Amino acid sequence: MAQPKRLTELPEKILDMILWEVSKMSSIYSMMWLREVCRVFKNHANRIIANRADFESHNGLMYEFRASDKPGKRWLRFPHEIRLQYLKRLRYMEPAAGAQPRCYLYLWLSEMQQLDAFKSISHGEQPRVVDQLMAGAALGEFNPWNLAATQNVDIHRHRRKVPVDGWHDTWAQESTESMYYSLLLCRAIHDRDLADMEKWLKECGTTPLFTVRFNLGPLKLAAGSGNKDVIKMLLRFNYPPTLNGPYEGTHLLATAVEDSNREAMEVWMGHIKGETDEGVLAELTLAVRAAVMGKNTSMIDLILDNWNGDRQLLMYQGLLRAIFLQDLSAVEFILNKTTLDPSFRPRGLTEGPIAKAIRKWTPKAGTPILKALLERGYDPTTTYNGNEDAPLLVAAKKGDHELISLLLDYGARDDSHRWSILPTKGTHPTIMRYAVLHGDGKLLRILLRKGVDPRFEVGRRMYKIVVPTKRTLSLGDIWKALQWEKDHGTEGTDLEQVVDYSARLLHQPLQAPHTDVPEMSREEAIKRWREQMQRVERRLSHGGE
Image (cartoon, rainbow, N blue to C red; front, side, top):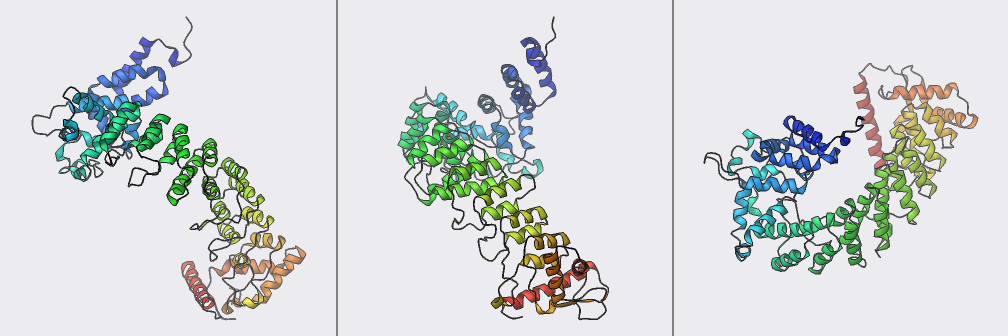
């Protein structure tokens, strides 16, 4: 008999025995992971989990979530039928020896059964509605420990370290009627039961359809899994994707994009096609960013083809998000898809594509992205606010010479006038001054060989500074050395002295010519140097020298 090559090729009886032994040693969550890895275990895993003593007594499952940073996310990873089965078992659990009151799930269902809307239902239909309420609750993103806990959980919260997350503290702040209709509608949407949907939508009227406690609402659920019929019915009852409210219309288009729900997007985009108000634009912007993050170019096409508003702004936001994610394919798709104006500056934005590309630049991914922007006419010199550092100076502060060389190849300039004391004579690059004062000889040579003006401007007290060897270097000496390097392209002793002097500048205080340099710590020297620079900046900002 040939040996099976894979675990899935084993007979089902053998697989059942293996899974049963694993269930004795592993937690419920580990079993669910095993089921996801090996789909052939699905039926066996569901049956074993449902019958485990830990599952019935909720000890094993609850401790899985009490130790979790995101219990709601982990809860949703269980299949819906398993979550519902757990809630049903939890509901019928007896209190321990009469000392502990019923769990919150039992109390919450009791409150629901006191509503007039529930009492109006026939006695024969009430059990079915209760089951539908629990089915709706099982769809929510919440910590299941909250429903399993008892009323005295607040008293022992700190001792037992129960992550209540404000669940019980705000129990009375949310309308029971709102939760009632929200959960019933969510169950109908999940099962795509259009008859029940219409019934509950007619009954609820203008009741807000969102339950904060379960982090669940019909629109949110429909955005993730609703089909065209579900979305159209919600629109018919005046529930659009941009419904104004604290929770109802929160990022619904983005949710549909993240879940690749094309049916919902097609219906909603047809509904808001002619709307151009800021609320719709904000929702579409988030949807485009979500599409970029998910590399879902088909959704971007769907949005652009079905909206009559400002596509330039939408794609600009998508471009910034693609740059932030260092996604070259998304950047090229956006640049090729639409004719973005490189000079376009949206209101309220403080950072453009070039600045963001420089800030997120890495040699491997950043170079192609930056080249793609520069080749399409984006100015490597432009700043957004007018008072921040030029991109070239930002690149210099990152200390990456390859990035600086790339910007210079595409015509980057550093015309900042923040240090200019003689504005009538024009301005000179701040980056040259930065290279000199930081003693970066390699950067100096790159700048000079790329044609950057060797002159730079400083405050009067920086014209003559004594280096530790007591040799005075004037501003003219520095300029001559830099100009010689630029004209002749050879390394001379003067430039080496400039670099050596600049490298020591941050470690020594400013002194008068031909005076001894007192010894001091590096930290104190840097502190005094910065204080001197701040005084120069203040004088220049007031128009003085």
